[in-house]
Length: 493
Ligand code: FAD
Image (tube, rainbow, N blue to C red; front, side, top):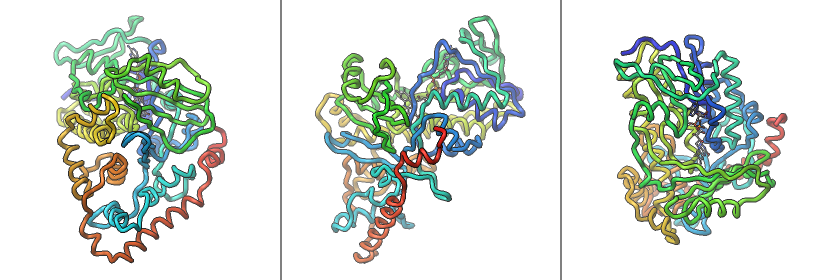
């Protein structure tokens, strides 16, 4: 065990650094000194604009009002992701954040829907989910006393600035400078201090590595090790470019598959974030850039920027007195917009296991086990989109269709294909509605449904399905248009 933690040093001020800084100063700042070092010269990765609904939990913890965050970040609402050309060219499906229909004690709604579909009583599964239909129709409103199954498209740079202002108001000390060296204690290898370019030493008891892909502390200093997942997720590059909005702002992210990867389109209030994710084995940076520029609409606002990445995870996310949060901890491509969620999960986990009285191996092990499990689950969900496809029109898609996948994912695919059942691992991020939407969207039709459905007489099944569909439609019809609601909800934006 180490001595009590009194001073925390956060290295790096991208989204991860400022989310961590805001949370620690807000929730534990009275008992701790918190310092953040960042370098304007290096800057941040500057992407990361699509989120998922769990961000509400973080904002609630920080006492942030949704309207204030949205106004500060040029945000729109997001109800899901539309996957185009993934199952096959010309086919699309929406993975919405809502829950499908109603479950019964024995099985999920998907089983009732499957039988209804076989009998010709049910149509699109999205008709049974409010968020799904609302996304398709461009309608949305935040209603009192309702679950917040919505997320945001937002400007990541503005989000970091917003959190920075908050953290600094709460007493966080920001130090501008480039970290040139990391000094370790001789006796145990723990980090003692960061040395800046100007010679200044910044000492601390606990160090949070938020230095992005550089992983300056956790890897370059502590050599923690990296588990490479690029054989499962072969995309290794992205090109990002922003365009002026041309008035197409659906309440969902668009993910459009191309021959060697996919393209995102993320609509903010006044601009659109665009990017092409691709595998450099099959597409050069130049061709990727040309493809992206060909596919986008509206005035281009910045030079296209190539970002290289390796998919995988740090073997330990907490090593000695260093916790890696954000890109320094590993990377899963942004297909399901999970990175900011993982940042928030690591922050909350650190606060739950906070080593006020000194670092204990049991806390470190718990943190690492939980983080790895969480990353494994999300990794499987992302691989699913590539593996289950009918596309064979390029070397990239033939590779994905035929690649080996983790046994955990194979089990889930087999189980769903055989019987429509979805196996859930504890409190994992993606629930049954998400797995069902993506597995069916990618083209799996289960061979059977749960036998309990046959206990319901057919006229009752028809009424059950019909009532849900009518209620969903009635609710969505009563909602305002998404953009009209934003004008009314956060007028200062
Ligand atoms: P960075 O933003 O890179 O910040 C690193 C910080 O460390 C900077 O402040 C830098 O100045 C500092 N630093 C580094 N070295 C030094 C040094 N020597 N001295 C001083 N300071 C230093 N996530 C989502 O949730 N949704 C998305 O839609 C999404 N899209 C993405 C698209 C792409 C192509 C990529 C690559 C990522 C995407 N992400 C997305 C992930 C998201 O961008 C990151 O999780 C998030 O931005 C956090 O990054 P970070 O703060 O860890 O790193």
